[in-house]
Length: 284
Ligand SMILES: [Zn+2]
Ligand SMILES: [Zn+2]
Ligand SMILES: [Zn+2]
Image (cartoon, rainbow, N blue to C red; front, top):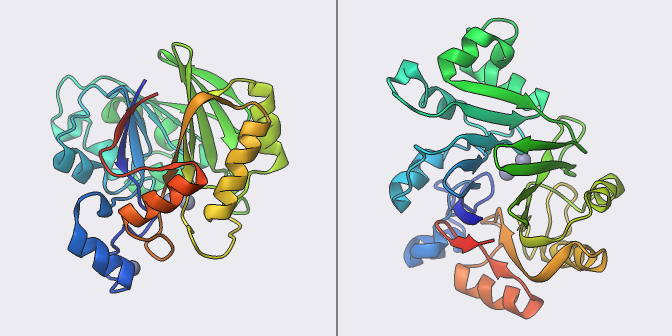
């Protein structure tokens, strides 16, 4: 699989346009990989992970086309991962002709949130066939623990530890042609339920994109700092979930807790992992 990071920042973006902290000022001065848009990723040009507010900007900035996208996985409905205007911009209502039907894999809650923000839809929202035709998409509700085929991919939903009192956030194990990616943002330390789903899944990942929101700050409950990141990777390795040569990337980086890209790459290197940046493309 070919994985492209479209955005690698936490919900505010990095730099946060409204923030004058030392990290944001340094990112503005340095530019390049220090400029991070809200998190999203693209697999093989045809599977989009999340529909955040910077997806359009990412494609413009990095020369990426989404015309071949047939599948979309939503991790959860927080606004930095779901901007429903991205759904209307690919439908016939926007005079887009010939776009493939989009299979939209998301929890029932995320589908409801998308429908609510589109407004003026029938009560069934995205589950209404007329709405689906208007938006040129087919929703595929998914729940934690489920494994479903998505075109040529096999997708397993793992429960994230991320404000579970408000929503049902998901991490995804995505497999194709014997290769496997663990897309794991947003989450705090994984719950035992998540470890059980991973054990039942039973595979080994060739790449991991893992939450690093709180970098060098205190331990967090709904995201990870660097120590929690390292502990999560160690347990993945201990449980046999990492294939030989697996590449592990820090992802979803908060401006408040992570230094500039080169400094982060240096400290991550000492800890045995890599740092994603916007437009980074890797073979999984
Ligand atoms: Zn987020
Ligand atoms: Zn800042
Ligand atoms: Zn979130």
